[in-house]
Image (cartoon, rainbow, N blue to C red; front, side, top):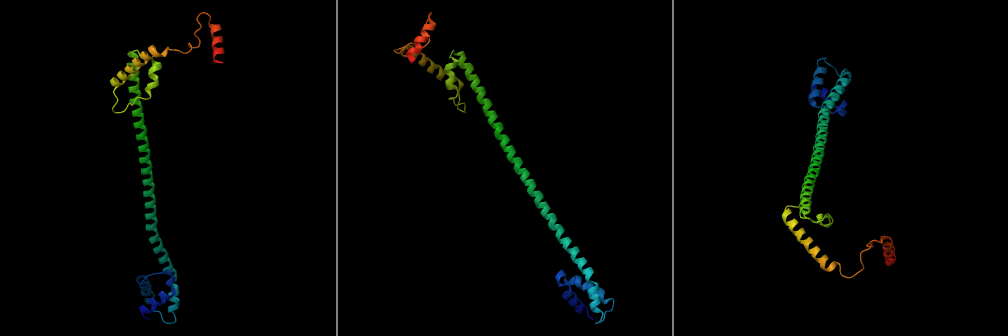
Amino acid sequence: MTRETIIEKLRNKYANLGLGDEILGSQADLILTGNPTDETIDGAVEGVGGLLKSIQSSLDKARQKPADEKKKTEEKKETEEKKDSTLAEKFEKLLGTVQRLVTKTATDDKKGNLVKALTAKSIPEKYYNKFLNTVDYGENYSEEETVKAMEAEFEDFKQAFATEGAKGGNPPIGTGGADQNNQVLKDIERLG
């Protein structure tokens, strides 16, 4: 019995295990140490079947382990990338919020200083409140120019009201002098 014959018998018998010639050759050498004959060779080939299955199982596990570790490593990397991405997104959102707060605080400070300056110029709050939200507090903002412009507009308003505001029309409602109650009734009748 030759080594090649035994390898061929092992290959035919255990083809489903997918073992290479190196492993089958080592088993053929083991079988040859027992001096098999044509009558005993089939029994010897059957005898190493359990060992070959065990070897094949161990090889499968060894092959599977790096694949599993690689898969776990990739999953871990993806999870870390997601965490990094999420962290970066949270940072960007937080940065945006901080920038908006800084801008709002700066605008509020500028608005507060403008109110103080307008009050110092004796411009009534009821007048300037209508215009505070229209002021651009951006880069080109100048408190001094804004105060001058509002002061000039207020002076124009006062002048126009003094010369044109009292012309014609009915007197303001509720100006009844000493007889206020009767005046209110007259005003209601006039409106009705």
